[in-house]
Image (cartoon, rainbow, N blue to C red; front, side, top):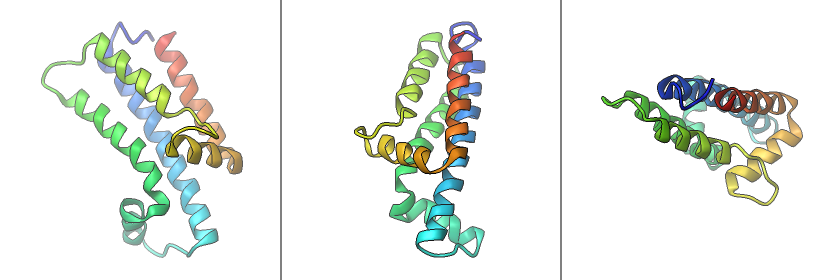
Length: 134
């Protein structure tokens, strides 16, 4: 789908892809946390860690971006093609793993190195980007 054709639909597809990636990154970080730090014994404890523990802090950038997309979709006025393209471009930049990039990019790179499921989630996100610009 071309993002210029249906901005709201494109942003919904972007959001859904980012949510799946975010969940996979959270699952991956939880597994490493439980292996290296301590077992997580409840949903409440897990939520508290995700929100406040430095271990999970790098994921806040992605969480906040997803909220921005949600807010854009909830505006009274529908998103414009230019606005949608801008958010898609920002998302593409954000989910670019790099050994030498931002904290998020480096931690994302590390997650991809250790967890094949993160690699598959990244591949799926790349497919979302390709579909949005196809």
